[in-house]
Amino acid sequence: MQRLLTLSDFDIDYSDHQGTFKDLAKLAAKVTGTTISLVNLIDSLTQWTISNFGLDLDQMLREDSVCQYTIMEPESFEVADLSEDNRFKDKFYVTGDPKVRYYYGVPLKTSGGMHIGALCVLDRERRTLDPEKIELMKIIADEIVSRLKTYKVLETLRAKLNDAKQTQKKVAHDIRGPLGGIVGLAQIIRDQGDSNQMDEVLEFANLIHKSGNSILDLAEEILESHKEKKISGQSNGQDKNRFDLIMFKDKLVKLYGPQAVHKNITFYVNTSPLTEHIPVSKSKLLQITGNLISNAIKFTPPGGSVTVDLQLIINPDVPTLQIAVIDTGVGMPEESRQAILSGSATSTGGTVGEQGFGFGLALVKHLVDSLDGNMVIESVIGEGTTFEVNLPQHIY
Picture 1 (cartoon, helix red, strand yellow):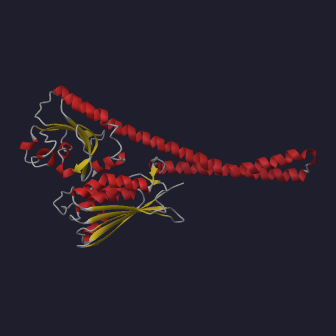
Picture 2 (tube, rainbow, N blue to C red):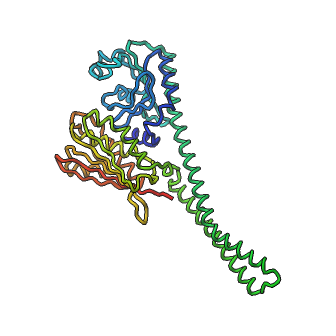
């Protein structure tokens, strides 16, 4: 669970970093003399290939991957011939194209010691890596993690800059009225010149004094509000990294459509035309929704369907992003529903024997709670399950 939380803290769009690591993926292959190199991040159910060299691959089920073993090793994992290893000899990448045989991988290790993924090289022939090449692989893996950290910092700084711009606009808007009043009163006094009556001047001065105080009050209110946001962590920038529901839909179709096709499940993502172009907070959305979709696919038999409904509910208090993931799967008993909502759910196998790792829905619950949202689950045995997540949107 801690490993998954560490990965989710990077808040990575798995489809967005092919260029970020392309040079490092190529370097790993060239250093080791292999034909294939992959940069993989591994969540609860899926291995995401965020950059590759020599093999066009975006994702695969975690249980089918070799890197699932690499992240459980302290330093590295090597298989001399995958076709002779009972764990891998029947996998599609061994029996069919690219018919790989050799594998060597090193974990992508954070400063806290968590293995969020792996850098691996593969080849169609057996290889022997000398110590110098192995050391270079570890250096490249460290650079990948370093770039991920740098990307996260840049995104945070970019969002903080946006936060500062929003504050600037708010200040300009809020003080324009009082300042206009002060300028107007001063203009009247100047234009009237010697004809000013003392009682009028005193009255104007009193009004100027009140307007000045109102500006000070506004400034103090804005600064105090900004200070409270920093203390509460709401201005860490993540909630400003917004995109709209059309973009969200495209990401979900691209990332999770292949999983549905692989299992012969119809996959729909729907948006509301009235709100699909309104900006929403991107923070943790892909982690939350992606885990729910992968879970729905896991428990829906072939020939079934998984539907995602996205809509922004506008209300007078705080707009709310509602995400509903609806499947026609096996359903769940009441005790399982309660276990998920309490964060104590355990893993079970999928409809065609997919492995579970026990943390996907627990991670979803944690992330939803961290965003002040709520989750509702409705399920009927033999008919399917609906997960509904509601996330407040603090949009200026």
